[in-house]
Length: 277
Ligand SMILES: [Zn+2]
Image 1 (tube, rainbow, N blue to C red):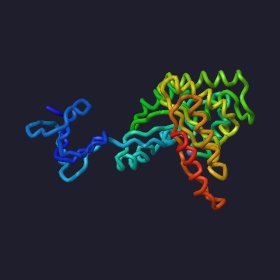
Image 2 (image 1 turned 90 degrees about the vertical axis):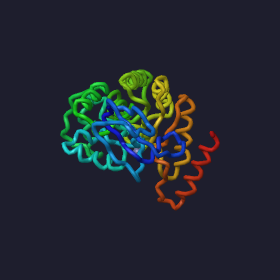
Image 3 (image 1 turned 120 degrees about the horizontal axis):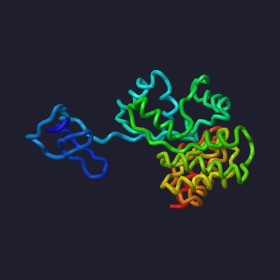
């Protein structure tokens, strides 16, 4: 006896192979069988004739960790579920609600305010691990894959200092990235056009991405410029990925067309990427 049987749909399983007409049986929250299952019994049967059956989609760029603290968060996630998205990679662009930099709580709160997070918010966590525990208790409508985010880590160590880090500060930040990765983060994200990422030297990011790489993490970046130096910003992202040994994800491959040269700059950035391929 299966829990759920999805009958007669066209199954696209995400492996890249051709679609096939098949039944999908679920038991204990997992896919138990895929195939022709005419005699199978189940508690719930769903007729998928004429429909496509596929695994949940993964949204690799979201900021949803910022919005789960809202009272209406379940309604917000309904749009994801209706699009078939069941997993979101969160804490992109160097932003996250963890670690919460206690010593610089007011500064952090005012920075988050510009992203639509209530300025009065008081978290019940400090570390990434505590945040994840809080999320588990709260109950998420979709799965989260968290990244270690540069912003809160730099604020925790350096507050609002608009300068490069000292070797001691770098060691402290590396420790915080390591703590995030130990808690289950899957990469390291930066937002280099934003405070405080904009004050970081390339070497700082390389060192922090290296820690994430030790845990198999990728480097995910909102690059340092989305205007007339976009191609150079992409060059920096490639340099950080190469020097840290990380795989690279450029979050927004776009250029703000304020100079009428946006397309040229995007092509120049494509050239940068083609050279390394
Ligand atoms: Zn971004």
